[in-house]
Amino acid sequence: MNSKILDLANFLDFHGTRYITFLSFALNYAAGGFNTFGYHLTNVVIHILNSIMVYFLITLIFQTPAMKPAGYGVLTPRIEYVALAVSLVFISHPIQTQAVSYIVQRFASLATFFYLLSVLTYVKARLIYTSRNTAEGQSKSFLLPYAVSIVSAALAMKTKEISFTLPFIIALCEFVFFSAGEKLSVRFLFLSPFLLTLLIIPLVSQAFHRRAEWM
Image (cartoon, rainbow, N blue to C red; front, side, top):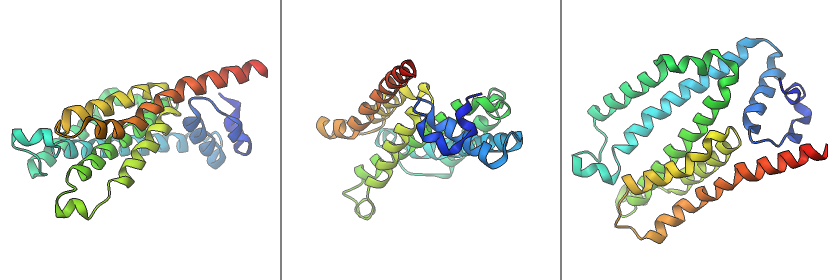
């Protein structure tokens, strides 16, 4: 056990790459000590939220420009059924039991939470941006979901190192699901903040190890 989670008052001194997960453990400890119920309940809630995001991510992907030639592009009951089926498989598949039953697996499940949230809100922001010439698109701003996506990406990087692949997945979504007719410079502007988040893990790791050597 990392002793830092036992003292929430001093927790801001912890600067590792898994800061967010350790912070969640510290909050669990502050609320219930070593009572495992709170830890497991938190894991269950995270897993349920991940499943919900899988549902909404699939519904959004079916509304992207790349899906229009296949006869999609708008939300239909059929798409909702597919998204529901996939999210139910995600939440109930036996391989997912570790995310709930093992407390320490929160590192992976919480990183997945921010990972999915970042991709989901990025796709949402891009959909709003691509519909800016329509009446519906003009009434909405893509900036809020876009900002949430960037912040979520940064938090994912501070949750577990598996999140290092996130900017590449977002870039893949951009070039697979959205129109190639847009200027490359515009697409790069959308992606550039996520590419910068690639620096978080190596820089934080280097600073953390350097600090450990000084202590």
